[in-house]
Image: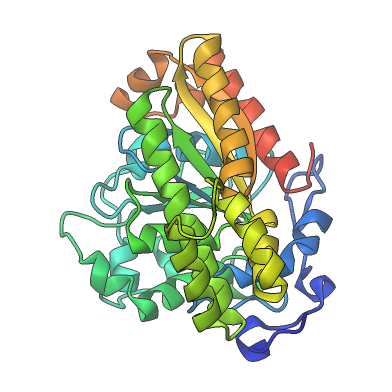
Length: 372
């Protein structure tokens, strides 16, 4: 299938996307994008938000950590994963996009920041690199979303703001703009607001953080439903098939003409029989995008099994390439380290949860085709 909007999507050759970003560690020679990411390049690019231009040469590995419910540990996971990747030798930029409650910098004991992402997106006072502050972890820089003054998400992350933010993220992966970052971790806010879902759509790997409780799991599924529809809409835009995909979304949202079919994957299979061209493109986007599941604060095997069930639901019900990346056991070390304004990996390196975070980082690397 040929793109009908090649200017927006850039080159069609996956190899041309493969500008390599090499880990700075002598022991780790992982290159991004990996062959797996290159093979999924087309599906990833078709699902990008409408104002995000596909990079023609290189891109840092983008990981977005989200979920439908607040208080599930997104910032804790983002902060400690960023530190773990930095310790593995990667240059890491962690962006706090929880615009209503920025606290990622607190995990690193940072105060008195000169610039925040609001200065970059709203006030145009600086470049995105100027919002990044060094942390005690070598190779890791963090950007807060705001300081004391609140800023309007609706204004700053409109179509123009999203394009500006995405261009800034991509510039972090280019050496000609300064330090070349290998990994960009986006810590998202709670809920499924448009800007949150759009940022999740930009990721090579989207991580859903959840708790083993009904409300958290339910909100995670609502998040995936919103993501599904947004990816379909983005696909239609990039292929100049807006009317066709609007019909698909309307059909998926209803139950007419589908008989006993209940899942979105079953409905898509039925629609494929009459419209293989459009539905095939949609299926490619969903299958080519990895959704990771992390179950936080587990206390039993039954809690862990919920994460595995969510993986199966992501695949069978929504059609994503979903993967249960791992779990983090309930441990008081998590809140104690935050109270101390120190990373869990630094404050309690021997804790079991710290070992789980290390395992989680390796699962993430494997999910994008890399290994340590």
